[in-house]
Image (cartoon, rainbow, N blue to C red):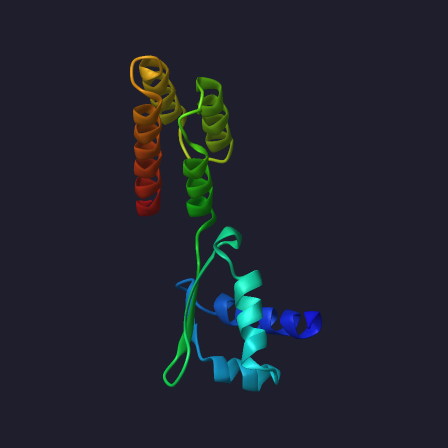
Length: 151
C-alpha cells in the first residue's frame, strides 16, 4: 500500500504545485485511472497525508459529480492556529513571552507588536479571570492572524 500511496501523494502534490492559487479540484476517478488504483486507496492517502496539521484542507464528495478539493494553507496560518490552540486558562506570562519570542524570530510580528501584547497581558494578568484572560489573548492572536493575511 505504501508504494501506491506514495504515487497518489506525488500525483496530487504535482497537480497542486502546478496551481498558482494553492488549491485544486480533482475527480477520484481521474486519479484512480492515472495511478491505476482503487478509489479507497485515494481516500486512505487523503485521510493520512493531506491533513490539516500537515497544512491541507480537503473537501471530498463521492458519487456522480463528486470531487476532491485540496487547498494548501499558508504555513503562517498553521502557526497562528497552533498558538491559539495552546492558549487556555493556565497560560502564564512566561508562556506568552515564549510565544512572542517565537513569532518575532520567525518574522510574524514586529518588536512593537510584541511589546504591546506583552504589556497588555502582563497588566491584566491578575486583574481578570483566567477564562477572560484566555479569551482576550486568543482574540488578540486571531486579530494578528487576520491582519497577517492581508499583507
